[in-house]
Length: 263
Image (cartoon, rainbow, N blue to C red; front, side, top):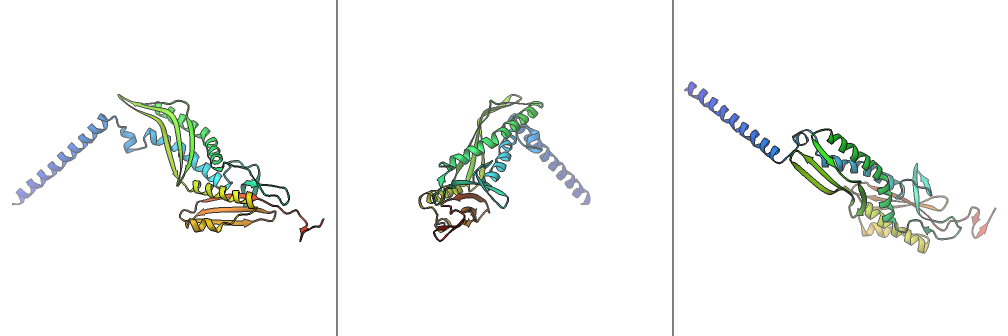
């Protein structure tokens, strides 16, 4: 009886090894017949994934800057608030005058700022990845990349047009463009910021309670500064993402008290 049990155990083990062997052969056949990159599947990332990261890295850095600096990468006319250079999106230095829009098309301005900021890094990274892959068994070619950034509800989208072609062995893949999406409330922030600025232009001030009433996930802070600058902070309650911008409207000259100017 014991001898029979041992023989059955051995047969069971042989059966398991045969099944495993067949499974490995099937996997290898699928990999090689589809032109799959064995190394990238089990040890690393595909060429397209690497190139997507060439966009997502610089984009995240650019988003951090525009969120903290009023939609600008390198502000020139700004208010310094807690070590942040917050760009004025509506400004005047004329006493008792309403502010003038500095960026009438704020959404387009932010998109252009991001495009200009990321393009050089994206192109350099793509070329580095291409050269690294070409030293191996993969051939990668693309034309001069064109980067386009779009703010849409809940996302920032980057489309990199480059006519990418990847050749490995007898198989090839072609991509007219690579699309990279980053989850963000920046579109909503820019929309609200532009509306606040329009109110400042028309009335010299803005009421902000309505925005949180209409969108419960949005928090709006309005912080008056000593020189009649107002720092606005828009926050998404769900993600803690924020957008800072500054407005200076109807400034009161120094020494003005109760309708009289004291020098």
